[in-house]
Image (cartoon, rainbow, N blue to C red; front, side):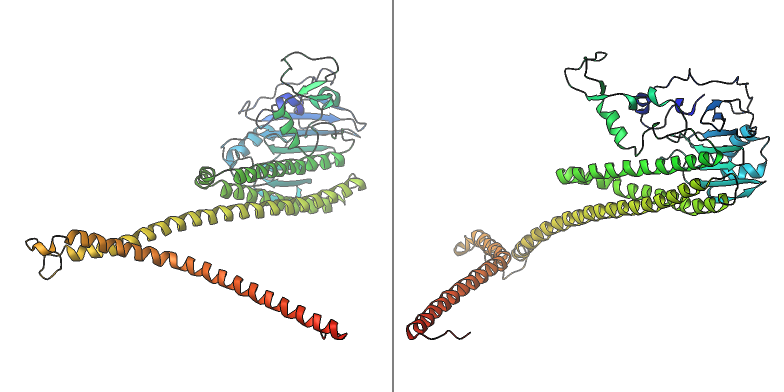
Length: 453
């Protein structure tokens, strides 16, 4: 089974991207390999002749001879299984001939690069839940005529397939309302759907066009690492597009949208995903230079492939800077939402304080006139001269309310009056200076003198 024929991880758009027929790929007879966990991992085995051709082969973990070399790839499922369960899957499909130390060096978390049992082993496994889209695990065991790789889920562009049998080789046209399903107009070309086009824009590479068949183990190693970097770049591009759309939503949205983003903790979650992505890139920055250093001493590793490894290290550094910029943008958006939330709280507290200031004097007045003691004016019910006491108390409340409102309005009025007075003074001084300047210049012109500066 070809790597490019597998079901891609994601939203399902790739089902419309790749339509590959493996009829023209020679297939060696594949014997069944009995395992204790059938169907839990995907296994792909290839043999390369060193001349640009490759064939499917049986899963026997044998090494090539002469110019031939073999590649065995294992895809671990993206689920909620424990790390020990992933190790059991690898023991089931790789032992023998691999030993326990080989399995542990491939499946453990964290960056690693070194020689294990005579083979070069490196890994960039990031800790985290395997079901997360920001958990990346890639490990490889490299010898002179064999490469064994383990990945968590599908890695785009990792396999090989004919270029001319995919959607990328079609002549596209924009979908229109007059287009009916299953109908093509002459000269209109292949109609591409909008959601497929959006998915293609998140990819920094084509799925197959820049995927030549390696002619040596060194080219295969470079290809594996290059696909890993491309996968990280795709995730960063998708995050950039998501962040741009969120910024547009914030500019157009109102109270409900901002409140929803705060309740969902959207930006803290995005910031956490960026930190996980930074950790994966940091692992690559640690491992790739050591891989280049150890491969440079191998006689079967070509010099131009060493240069390719150096270029990938530079790409990782630029990618790390880009992720740092995204983290700063997320922090800025979160700070803007926090300031907006503080402003809403302060506005509500202002209204509450305003109401409390209004009703506090009124409550004092009603409390005074509601006391059951003697001597309080307008409280004697039998005195006919004080029959307007209730009206007097209401008038006193209204006067107190007007006084409180005047206290609030007075600062604004004072500011407006001072600004108006300042503008009037400046206008008067300007007109006075202009008249005096004209008088002086006219007098000097009549005398034929010069104006002293």
